[in-house]
Image (cartoon, rainbow, N blue to C red; front, side, top):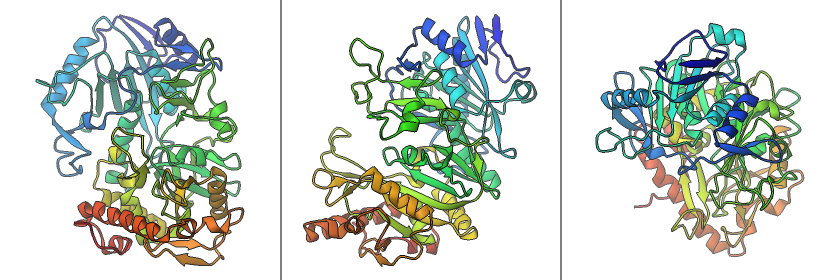
Length: 534
């Protein structure tokens, strides 16, 4: 066995049968290895462009938690959180250790959680150099002294070339991601999509932080103003979570994963993993300019005969991505943490065009909307989707939330009331009609509404209550056309608006049925007052 790089003194799992092990290489070294290994090529900006192969996104149906004494009565088992017997984990883990004999491995030691109290040392072992570069970007980067002192608490073993046998290994497909909270090991095989590494560890923290420490873990971005006011942005993919938090007038805390304790908000990561499809410098200059040497582009394509990325090319996937260290954003905070939040924004891209562009939520509505986690898919995004389709993802991140959603909502409600936090619902979707009839709300107007909320300019204006959803909507907002603020007024066909809005409200009620048994009376008060759909 040959070893290179800065090796930590602590062993977590046995990898001694590998032929070569590269420990904690620099971004330049990892880029060089990736090119030599034919894992990727350099774009004209210096970023490393790689393909993730068959999988260009996560495979949530193939993610499992080992069911044991820790998880049996604590994880919210069901369509999202799938159980697997520990014997299958042990069997696959053993097979993977046999598989790496004679192979080349890359080991990256990192930290997850920008909190001195709750941070966790982490080790990622993989066969791909660009996976190690991804981890360098996405997790917090310890010093050489910290590497020598810290014993990794969690280990991720990611071997894309290794495939399971569904007939004997207790899994659904050849690809898998299995989290063992007792042994503190995650194993990933059969897929090279790097998001499985990132979200595997996020799932761990979404269990540990609320369950053991009453810290709210959040699938959200966060930033801080010059007066040190902190804002949190929740939202599913395509709603603007990364875009709206990358505000040149505010300091970025992080774009995707955070914790909220008694001291304030802290980033769980050390980097950003932004969608790159249709990226334009004039609309998102901070993200565009972060794509340089050290960044990792995934599944993009170049203009013919060049190394210039064609960001509008979705021939591989709509889910093109770029990973870069948070330091690549000029106004990012170091360390990545801020004080207690003043404002929280729930972002939804309502393709039905019936939700107000901005509305202020009561604590009851905030908890209800948080559990609902609504956005909408537009026609054409999936095979067979010809009309807008409502999507509900608890806490705006269902695939990563192992506990009962009520646990997260109660923590949110307690914290927002204790610290007097304003919560806003922002529709970044359509107005004047559904997708195909109405128009997408302009990014500039959305930014103006968020700025008005952050600067307190919506505190003294008059509000009217939406008749269907019961949401309080401001009558005026600086730099936003008044007619845009009322969705009913923006529709030409008022009867069709009412019918569409009522149908969507009924979808909210029907979706919440599965959580009613554990919901508090206050959460139920936040529901739209409509009859449930049979």
